[in-house]
Image (cartoon, rainbow, N blue to C red; front, top):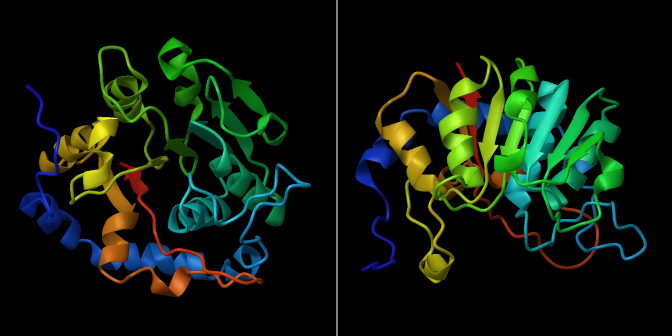
Length: 254
């Protein structure tokens, strides 16, 4: 019988591993600070007249994750960006590409994206990841980016299982990989028990095995809990606040 409830707060071994690289996280976040002038032009609230415009106060992509995604695209200048799960992430990536005049190909893999984002993409695969030709991932090279924000559940032949067991191990050196809704070294939030998310446990196994396959570039939830993210928060015009929250976890393949 399942008994879903948070088990760690935090997991001691994972916490110790992540603590070793605080300087790396600080350096990554420092790169994002240079993009504040562009980030502060993004509105707080949705523009009903422009469905393609990103905005901070959406419920799917928290601000720190949007900053990390925008900042990594602007900084790495990827030739190709692949996302598994599309919507607000696509809007922030497309804005970074436009703001900095990048020659980045945006590829979306999502059977049912939350937002009308096809116009922002160069290639759309409207099929579940597990039904796609995974050869597209072999085209990624150094500084290219893949971002997974999909079902979050690992089952037989699910997208999460395919990502962690087939795609992540095969990515080329220098590729940047991000996964959303990762709270390590903490467990999932108590009010998420009914979601039965499980992908961060697969990532935890990689980390605890101390794999040499990748370096941790930025664990957003962990870094924010350590007070490292304060300086990157934008102050866009208008009333209200922009929440300092996020849970994306970024890796650099070795």
